[in-house]
Image (cartoon, rainbow, N blue to C red; front, side):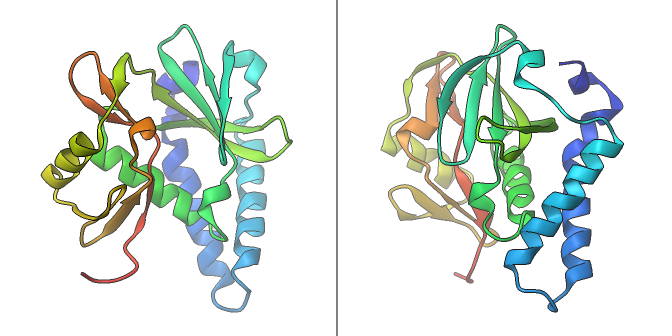
Amino acid sequence: MDRAYSPINSILEQAACIVRREKEAAGTLEPTESYKRRQIEELISFANSNNLWITVQELNVEFLSKGGENEVYTSDADIVVKLNNFEYAGDDLENFFIRISAHNKFFSNVPYQMIGFAYNSLHEFCAVLIQPHIQAEREATEDEIVEYMEALGFEMDYIDEFHNEEYEIFDAVPNNVLYGVDNELYFIDTQIRLSSQSY
């Protein structure tokens, strides 16, 4: 975990800039599905040039679970490691970086930090993210989630979906939001995107 305390700490910002530049260079001449492929190629080059490859073995972690986009591992260092395959970014990896940045803005008590890149068990290219491991008493209730989101200035659209003028947050369901032993809520795995419409 030395990367957390090194100049590499800005991997997230650097990778976001690379993805944005690649998208701007492509402009509207290419179909959007080719953005992702070219953005991944640029990130692989970035990882190669800066020695940012990580293997699960070197992290000394144990497998915990697998979802639609993440393979999740835990360690004795009170962190959770997620290998994120960019599945939910759609055809543009910029969506992934918007989501992580917004998560860290709104849910700063359980921030993501990007420490490098890896290939998961299916040999998919992934961002390697770490988050604090939360000591949870239980899952949050729907009412607690709504109250928390409204305190942040979000309006509820559906029981697990919220918006403000800039962002939409969805999948804010109890198993993605923990009630910690310190009586705080921890939003560990919601989906966030830029608002698609004005409210």
